[in-house]
Length: 99
Image (cartoon, rainbow, N blue to C red; front, side):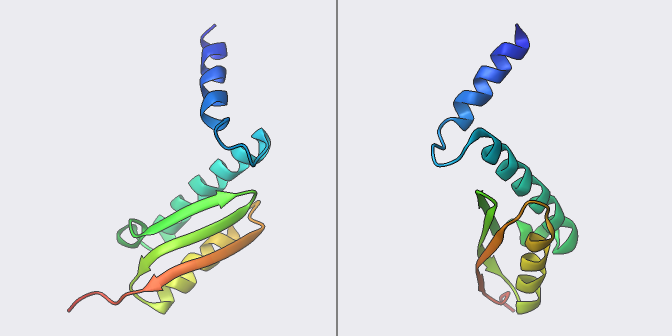
């Protein structure tokens, strides 16, 4: 009974995204979770808070601000290395840290 309630709750939460199949929604959630973890290890925890990750149908969009082109390149490379990522849209802006 608990499993049925949990399944229904998940279906309701995931059902709000009508442009994707349930399988794609699960894949996108997995992609987002893996990428956020990878960004924390590869780019650094302080930069991750400024990077927003959105995944839809395997297309990952990165947005927010980073402090250098190197950080931007690392974030994009991390996104491309995650399994099931089809394409990466890099909308990251470079805003150097104030002195």
